[in-house]
Image 1 (cartoon, rainbow, N blue to C red):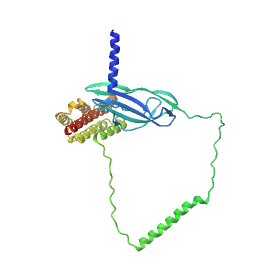
Image 2: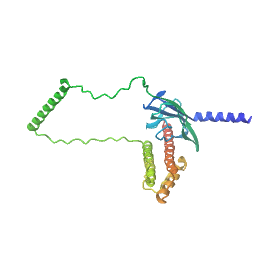
Image 3: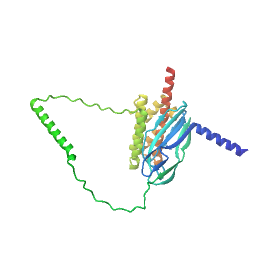
Image 4: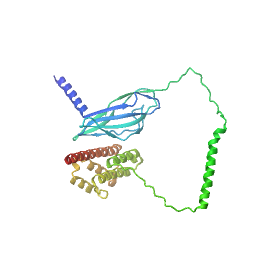
Length: 319
């Protein structure tokens, strides 16, 4: 009876997890050609009351698949209003032919204050090499062939030369007969793409992670850039100037604004570690460097989810 109860508990826990998050890997094609890029899609369906910490991927997925580029993380609509769908595309390529199994991709999600670990499942791929007919003779390298010339090949160049001469003649005549008027040329307006605070923060975080200044001994610069990222996000989202505040003043305002409960005290932990590096000249471990970036990523997701929930509530009250 105890074994039967344990099996029922495991099945119930698995059904509950599936109802909360559903992670999947999908290729555009069933097979890959050797050295030919294709897109691998990471798709995740989750309940709206969860916060998923999207996995931070490196340059490869296992020993046989390299990542060439990544698309931004997209949010897609679903038929279920209680479900959110996230998707990211990875342009991948393999230089080893054969049948391979990609390893699982771990990630975390927050259910209230509990952190649960989950994975994108394993994915089997087949990489095919182009067929080579080994029965044919091996031929040597041919020399460069001289195709010769035909007068028609020069005809377009002749027309171009005549056109240039005609334009030069009329330009000189116009300059001689008519004094040119000085005209003020309009200054071109450069339109910059404006990202929202959340997108800007994620893009900046990705650049800091890839630069990895701490690997070159620039630990203080690495932590200063991360704190500046959080300050700019706070200023753009909440309209308060925190650039000149000390860490204590910033945390005091954060608590008065009621935001400390939302992020679960993560801002305090991040600022304490950054201040230890800046003022106490502490040299954290590599694990703490990575923890800092991952925790800021989680901090941004929590606040952005809270903002969206607040915005939806305001819209419903107006209606």
